Length: 87
Image (cartoon, rainbow, N blue to C red; front, side, top):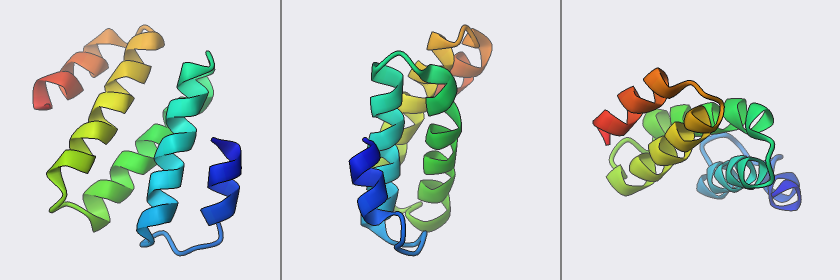
């Protein structure tokens, strides 16, 4: 996750590879038992996807699912449920 993110960090936020790297980092943090650190990364990833790639429904759904799963891990079930309903 971190190596991927560091590779693309210097690119503009409109760069698709940078956005993908951010998503990979968030998922890796969550899967390694660090949902508190993953949450802001996954929130930022979803926001970027909505801002610059709103026409890519599949990538937005993936980002929403990742964020909902992370919120569930943190016990924030009401927020997770809202996102899951939108999916």
